[in-house]
Amino acid sequence: MKYTPLAEILRPSSLDEIVGQDHLLGKDGPIRKFIEKSFLPSLIFWGPPGCGKTTLAYVLAKALERPSFFLSAVEAGVKEVREIIKIAEKKKGTILFIDEIHRFNKAQQEYILHAVEKGNVVLIGATTENPSFEVVPPLLSRCQVYVLQNLDIKSLSLLLDRAKNYYHQHGITLNIKEKDALFYFSAGDARKLYNIIELSVEANPSQVAEITNQLVEEIVLKKFARFDKAGDQHYDTISAFIKSVRGSDPHAALYWLARMLDAGEDPLFIARRLIILAAEDIGLANPNAILLANATFDVVHKIGMPEARIPLAECTIYLAASPKSNSAYLAIEKALQLAKNTCEQPVPLHLRNAPTSLMQSLHYGKEYLYPHQFPHHFILQEYFPEKLKGTTIYIPASNPRENELKTYLLNCWKDKYDLNES
Image 1 (cartoon, helix red, strand yellow):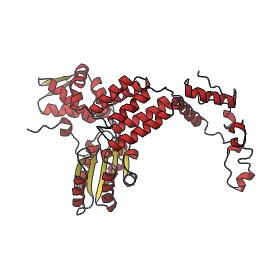
Image 2 (tube, helix red, strand yellow; image 1 turned 60 degrees about the vertical axis):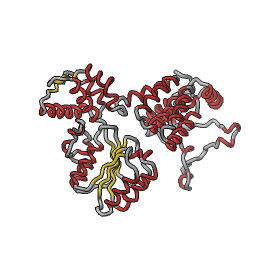
Image 3 (cartoon, helix red, strand yellow; image 1 turned 135 degrees about the vertical axis):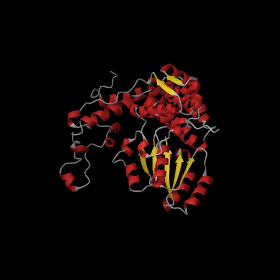
């Protein structure tokens, strides 16, 4: 007898059965309007696992009564897409759903593009990664991108009620004594919620299945990691990886890297996090770090797994063993807040652009001093609005590279800016 997961059994079959995503499915939501008008453009659904991307595609195909094909980019290739496109040439408007479309390479995506341009295929792509990075620009420009969110507690509670009703119909009572761990480990993921519930029922041999925080934690730690190892502790593991690199521990960082790779994590996701780490946590202490991280992303994109594990390990070790500084991160956060609170401050006349004679007559750009015309390519000059003179935003961190920057800035500005860490 074929096994069907609870998440599949309880998958919504109509728009009104879908919980969450009110910004898309509410009364004035764009997806609801597509169904009402029997119109469907090509779409990209971007959101975390278990938020309803695939379900939404199924519901759209059913509601619009279109021929539809569902593929996973992990398993399918150009051959399968080509066969579908041949069918679509005879049935224009055929829906082609591709799950994890970010895993298709450039050539595969461009092959789909031609069918979309001709109108033979309406593409619905689902991705957990930013489509701006993972979908080729020509294809992306022909798709509407909609962002789906993790499910909130209210939505998860509704799904829990559906599971209780389902089991009740099959002679099993779900006794939910505690919900905290259930909702915590579900992390806004409907599929994960149903998987935990299903495993909890299996762990109770009687007709009354009690769900407690302790039971859920045991299931997640002992069984659920194997049940859904690519997604179970996704956020906790990447958090441990990031904190190990930030904490300059290459040993622990490599361990968490290996955990992610072993669980099937997308290597490009890890590479992207390394770029962010290089900018946020290493920054000006070692400007070469972001160059290496960016090069690592390119290499990983070109060679893929299993070879990509080597440049990922090299970059992880380099970043973890590098001096650390978050001075640039702190500076831009401070600057953004300052800009938000002082947006009414005018740009000083001498800093304004003066491309026309009218602007020149209004003294735009007048009295601006060009630094390269002065010794050491520097001249004392005010660059802030009047009311912000002397505001210190960037505080150099204590490391060899930024100590050099601090010395240079002090030589230039003397005591105008306080560059000492508070």
